[in-house]
Length: 314
Image (cartoon, rainbow, N blue to C red):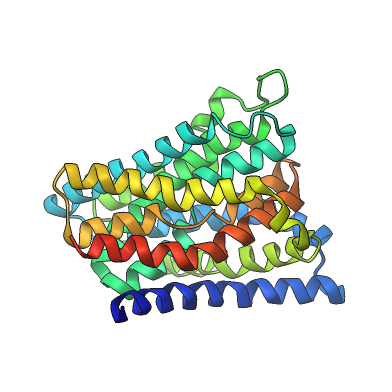
């Protein structure tokens, strides 16, 4: 029981930290200091500048060795599997919903809060080893997010999408990986004059995203959260179905210990704040996105400790 409560407190603490930043955005919107209209213009900064900086930074912070490369590759395979399972689950759901809402629910089912939630939790529970294993989750997340995520957000009623095939390669996520991967493989140490600004820009990502999210939340119909069954279906897929599928697969393959715990921290993370950022970027239903991310994040305070405790028993 103490073990469970310890994990619950760690998860709750991380959610609280994030939502204090969200509250700043909420208050700023209500007082007119930084409104939703202004925040929409900040999306491009998050989309094209700060998120790529986070991706490149994750490669620079990971030390290369033969053993680390093998483990990183396995962890990456698991992170890819998490996204593929989410895509498979979500593709059969929400078919009767309007397109603007359907895209949001499906995005929220697939993409987890890896950078803002999973990495800090891994640091708290497992230390540097946990961050090492979870870092590839950020990489996989961004590859899928800027390809499949962009595709479903631009998909039209006739099934076609404004998303161009060339954007599979020419997008901020993949370009950042193509820059960061050689730096990792060849253990490149950037000069301080480049590294310091890069890390500083990356550090802006979480607070900026949370403040922007807060402005959207200030304009969302929060009372309707409990009337929307699709939000709870999204939460069930993201917080229960996906983590348990990944857990079963890893156990069948014989994985345990820190590797398994890190994988489950990544798999059990709530819907990504990128759900709101991408929704704004592509003009989908912002009210639905804000309510969904809020509800799933709060429910994760219950589910994540359970999933993590299950993994730690192995």
